[in-house]
Length: 532
Image (cartoon, rainbow, N blue to C red):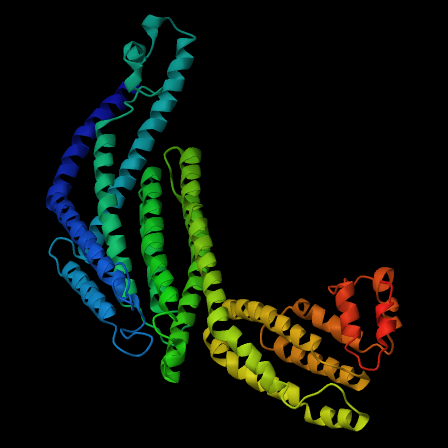
């Protein structure tokens, strides 16, 4: 039986060669590979041309020729036309149109070819697996018979020992059969076509990127690109070829890193730097903010989608029928784990974008916000003034009105996750600014009570603005309010040191004494003589 399996392998090599020759001829695979190579050269030249033109312009467009159209609008942030963006858009449109209408490399035709090639690879892999499994079984029988019979009585196929074992596996089948060699040729063609179709599809998705605030918080390219990635990786897994899957994953990682991620980097980098922020109209500035926040949302969604894509493809890998089940599945899993590095890059760029948004737009508005809120507000009050302040709540109303107006656009546009992250870093800066103001303000008993109520009202208001609000950010301010509300400086002994209980003081001894000295009705010597 083993000899029959060997002859079956030889016959399959002959027949599969004829089938694949006919397939390559009928589908014009060689001509398509040549055309793709020519188009790749053209695309590289366009990349270099647009890179040089972008470098010489202040209002630079995107570096990639087809990705250059990825701006949410063809206008620059100032509202004037961006010549580089327009040129890049024309280049992207021309590339996409020529590809779509090309008789050889049209996307629909290439997609159909890849599906056929994946099925050929799958069937060939299953057939090879079947042959090797049956050969293993026969070889086991052969070895068992060898222990019981004389050499002359061995079953057919026992002459395997006389062959050059460098070219044969342990089950007597060829390590590199004719079918295996033709599969290598087929998978190489598959990878070339798949990589080209992947890049052009992603380019098109980004070039046609659009944003509709009424339907989504991200632009269309995110869903489109990750749909493409899922389709590409799932199709590679259908071949049951772990090496092909690894190569496909590597190609998608390269496309994400050098194309997709690069677009977002350039959007964030040029959002508020091409012209002076103060010189822009309010409408233009608001649109720039929206575009910037949509990019942040895209990064947030891309990170989430990357994790989800990895999990879904790992489930697919467990269902696939690999020839060497454990080793092949482990190799595929290791390849898919590389997507985590891309997700980390999305997160890092998102964090950088948040910091840039805070530093250039929001942080400069905090000081004027506090100045307006504290206008005509004091914390040295008599009883009647305290009662009036209780009714008016000037600081609370002004601060809430100013803060809500400052963050309204961000709260409406950002994803819940991004909004919470922005609030987190914004509150860090805001509390630091507020602490400085408190350290420069004078208080008495009634004023300290008023400040404590103002602080609690602001914390309550801010906590209602996000689901992931951390009161820990106001710990120092709360401790300041507690110290200011003491009836006498020695009351600190009831809270400090061993009597602090589970609470941890964030204020240093120097800071506590300085805060106590802000109370006009406290004796300075008594404060200085505190032993903490």
